[in-house]
Image 1 (cartoon, rainbow, N blue to C red):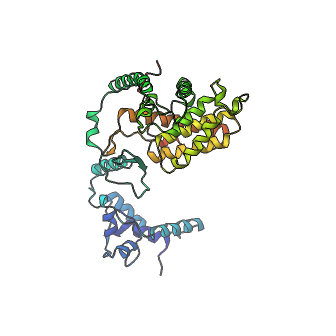
Image 2: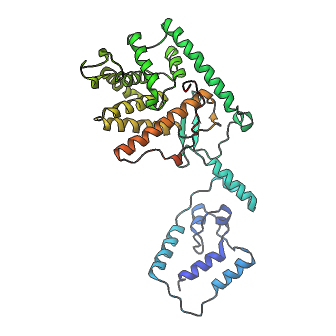
Image 3: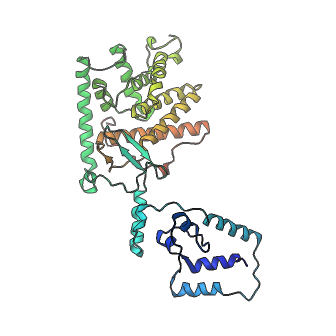
Length: 384
């Protein structure tokens, strides 16, 4: 005679396989061997579950036959069948971190909190300084990752000290711009330096319209030395965005039509963008966001603006810029300038995402609940 639903529930409350209990995995309670023991080739031994005197008496009461006839609705039978089907699924192999887990109540709570902290999104940094983000569902997520001991809470510098350093560096780089220009070190990508400086000046004067996604000290410094925060793609995106503010006719395709301003720079961006899409890069994100704002302002380029923004937001997640971890695991630690740039680019993209989505009536990409980036810009030089 087969057991009814109430008998199966009572039996599971009273006993469970020792192997399943030790591994903290769900037992299917199949007799004589449960599915988990079949999968791992273990000896299946059922032992009573001790829930204390109160729970034991309640279990006994549930196991006693009822004097009334039990009626089970079709919905209850269906739900019980679904539970059986779920319990009979093969369990995943237990992770090594759970095999020696302590069983005391206080230790379990502390381990739960610690595991939750370790389950935060991880950002891996290679020896070359390239960061990549992987969440828990990724096969590249490392469960027992150790934080960088050199960046612990006790060694962090106060924000006031960091702000002073960033402002001093911004002032120094502003002086070096003229020196690098006179030495011919600045790379204008073939454009006349006088016109290039004119467009750059317009950009720096109006970049608040694009939400500060470009960081002048790093860009102008690397423009002279070919550093990581400069690229010709970003430079031409700046040219294109600044051209609409320029009264000069040489930046227009049709001197009488201001809407054609920067056309040759847009063509250059298209040319350079092809190879730039093979790998995520901060300068590529900045260029895409600048192009998004410039094309969106034209009115009839909304599809192009939407697509450029989507590419930028994908790259942000790929680089892990939606999280702000001071303790970065890897051989290269982020500098204060790196963190400042990443925060500015992320929040600039966040605003662009919301404006684009609201205006076009489409779902946004980045949710604030999925971000771990403080709205804290420490370089106040431009603000003053």
